[in-house]
Every structure is written in structure tokens, then in C-alpha cells.
Image 1 (cartoon, rainbow, N blue to C red):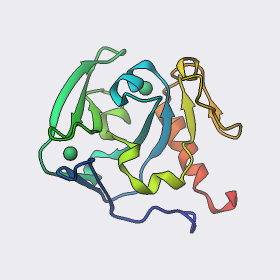
Image 2: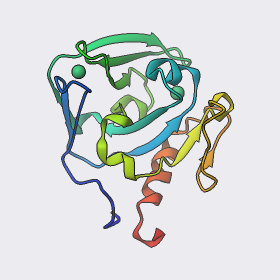
Image 3: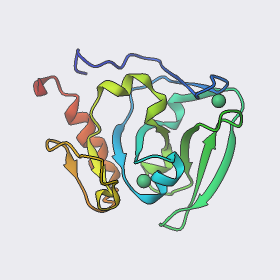
Length: 164
Ligand SMILES: [Zn+2]
Ligand SMILES: [Zn+2]
């Protein structure tokens, strides 16, 4: 872990009104930005920030509501949000994939410490908002390219101390 990393455990986060709180007891597996139209719809903003965490390292308190949708791969995704203020908090799917099936995908804007870290990839940039500029030093994929292992490896590499 890079000594300059702003992440210290447990990572504590909450919705906009503070009613729903959650904590993360292990370092995230990856952090990336998605410019697909689903992320634009769910966030009502330009793109989604996704922080993957092992489900076993994730705990929440307070009330959440769940809305589910079909995924492109034929599964279901549960999308959890605060019923009071409406903040979307995390997603999880019933995917049989060895990585996707074991993670929760937290909405990155709810974790204050992520403000100081670079997403390792920007995906679905072909549908990005015209005003969004992708940094030149970050991998940029016009399409989905959801290779779970590659996303996790890229994040690990970005945290190596030799990167300084
Ligand atoms: Zn709330
Ligand atoms: Zn997306």
C-alpha cells in the first residue's frame, strides 16, 4: 500500500442525509469510472464511480430500499438506495462469475477518501458527456470491457509504492 494513500480502515461512508451508514473493513478491490447510459440514469449525472469491495468486508446500518434490474449478461442486479434522501449506495448481482458474484459495487461518491484517488479505467467513453474530459494517463475504453481480473490488477498496480 502506498504510504500516501488516503484510505485507512475501516472506511466509513453514508448517504446524503446520514440515515444509512456503511463501513468497509478491507481495502477496495478496484475503483473505476463508467460512462454508460445506465450509470448516467442511476446517478442523474455524467458518469458513475464504482468501488468494488468484498461482500464479506461490507456492513451497513439504517434502512435501505432495493430496486432490481436485468443485466446484459442475463442476470439480475440489486440496486440499494436510501429511502429518505434517495442516494444510490451500492449494487450487487447474482452473477456466477467468481469475481462479480462476491463483490458489492459501492457508488464512489459516497466515500470521501476516493476524491483523492484516480479511477484506474474509464469505460463506455463512447457515451460520455461532451463536457467530461478523460485524463490522458488513464486507460480509456470506448466500450464496456468489463474484465473483472484486469480491473482488479490495474488497481493493485496503481497502489504499488514503486509508482511514486
Ligand atoms: Zn439518506
Ligand atoms: Zn455503467
